[in-house]
Image (cartoon, rainbow, N blue to C red; front, side):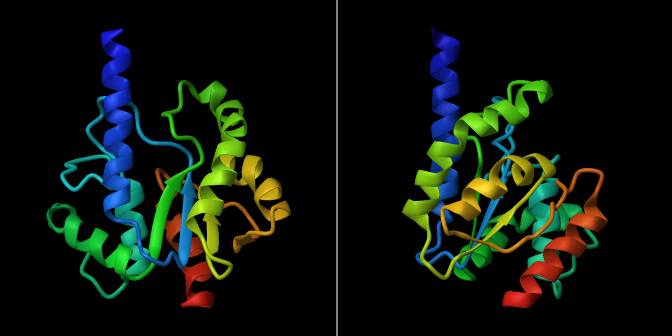
Amino acid sequence: MKSELIREEEMIDFENARLKYKPEVIKFLLIAEAPPKIGSNRFFYFEDVNEKDTLFIETMKVIYPDEDFSNTKNIRSRKKEFLEKFKYDGFYLIDASDKPIESKGYKKKQIKESLPSLIQKIKSLISSETKIILISKTVYEVCFDKIKSEGFKVINRSMIPFPIGFQGVYRKELSELTKQYL
C-alpha cells in the first residue's frame, strides 16, 4: 500500500514537471516510450538530473545546434534554461505510456494498451498544425498506424531510434525532420 502511494506520487511528479514546460501552442509533439523507473530521480523534464539523461541532451543538441554541448556538466547545469527555450519554441515531449515500462518483454504490450489514452491526450494537446514525431522503434511500430489513422500529422515516415547507443543516428534523423518544418 505504501509503495503504491509512493509510485502514484512520483507519477504526479512526472506530470507536474512536464506541465511546467507545456507550450501555449505546441508546434512539435515528440512522443517517447515511457517515464523512467520510479525512484530513478531522472526524467526529461526534471531540472536537476546528474546522469542518464541522454534523451534530453541529444534532443537539445538537435533543436539548438548553435549551443556549446561539449561539456555535459554545463548542459545539465543549464537544463532549466533549455527547457524554457524548448517550451517557448513550441516543443513538447510526452510518453506513449504514462507508467514506466515494467519489463522489456512487456514494452510493446504496455504501449499498445496505452494507445486509447495516448490518442485522447494527443487530441487534448495539439492543434491541426502540430507536427508529431515518434521516438523509438517500439513507439513507431505500435503507434504510427493508429495515430495516422486518427488524422494527426506524424512527420517521421520511418523509425527514429531512442538515443541510447544510437546518439548519432537519433540526432541525424531528428535534425532532418525538424529542419523541414522550422
